[in-house]
Image (cartoon, rainbow, N blue to C red; front, side):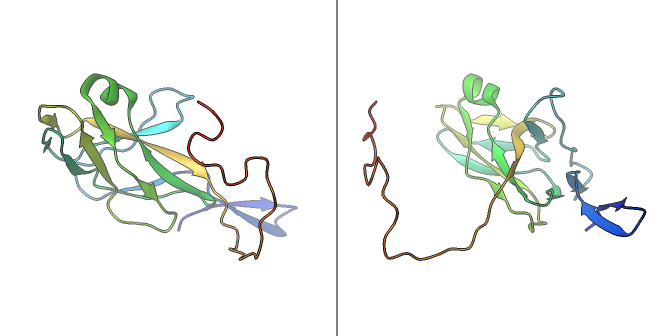
Length: 158
């Protein structure tokens, strides 16, 4: 993986930093991710193909991009609010692990009563980079008490 090497303390100590989202185009139809504004949380992802999503159906839409997310992060595929509001299009579960290097696909659900046409080059979802923790799993005989306890759905009120 390409990284930015920073020299510290007169070159005696090297620190590896990756502060960029590394992206590889897998075809000529791939469009690099963009941000809609300087403070946008997500990078817009673009369709690399024309795809029709049937009414009440779903399709896997290719981006023809492979990515390497920064160390300590994962990529979460999130919906674009305008597609959900205007066209009833939602995004299915999408987690891009730090070690995944395949084609990033986006599962789109059409909740409308009519087919939805995705055109090559359309913005279809957002890629949000999120920091993660991956602690060791520790089995316990008992868990610490909490105020909520085992209360589930609706137990804290509406």
